[in-house]
Image (tube, rainbow, N blue to C red; front, side):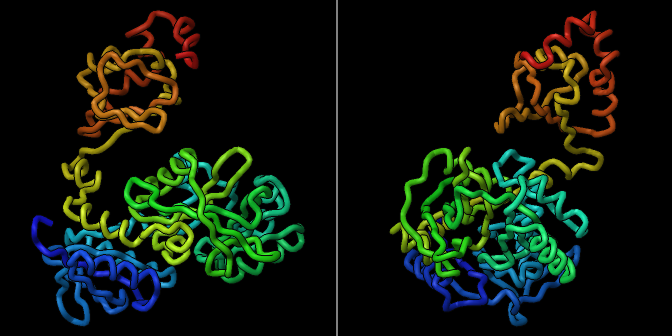
Length: 405
């Protein structure tokens, strides 16, 4: 950091754990001042004027945080990281990313919404919905899991309706959120762990369960082996980590007959198994990334775009307005004094799209400005009848091109 020694805090309740020790070793090799601190020994002072973080009663003096937050203290860990973020102290994984990845239901919703392939998944809160949920995900056998489980705990395979119903009933009685998930036969007892750091998969391995166990987790005595990841699997792993907001993630992939499926994403991935299997110094890769990334300020879109009262983002999905398909952006919007801030197309974001860019059926146009004025200016454009009167003469000529452009 420009000749200034980086002061790093590794948040971990297990200073002797393999992953924690390896991260500290690699940080110390680079001359980084490194402390391993128990997240439960911090206290927070929250106020508008001067929010504070105290460790054992003393103010913190760190430049960067590397969180290794256990599942059992997720709520506290997320609150602690949020406070660090409010003090503009760098965190390798953000509070939002960890929160989203820790809840399997929320993670599945985000991944599905962003076209990341996952096994079919159903959420049940009523025992009467179990059979319907099983049918929705493709029938028996099914995987039943609790939303907050980790390292294979809270994950079960059931082959009979009566056994599935009994298990779900017991889990609901314990106030668990219950997911019923498609069982991927061709991937029984195996999965792939891809270790994502920043915008790269730095290491990967295949994990295999022992005996009749279908869960392949290393902590459940599964075996690990080196594997070369194909570009398709690598791209899915990177997208999964990105849409959940994680810089460092262990992405677990199933090898489905139609390609990779994201099973789970771990925001504090263990390093022992993957370093052993791949021969890659993963801890070094993480510290290298952290040292470089900590030099840059982290600003959210909310900070950039929502600071002016009454201003914000207004997205328009062309699926809902197909009469605009095939038109040039400039001809549609610029006469009304409106300019698109960005355009989302085929999982790519185009900033300040050109006026001559023609709209496609699945495009999402993104506008920024005074929300009240934006809605007024867009009203006639988004109204089918008004737009046709203004722009195109007849409905029949336009509707022929809805899906063809």
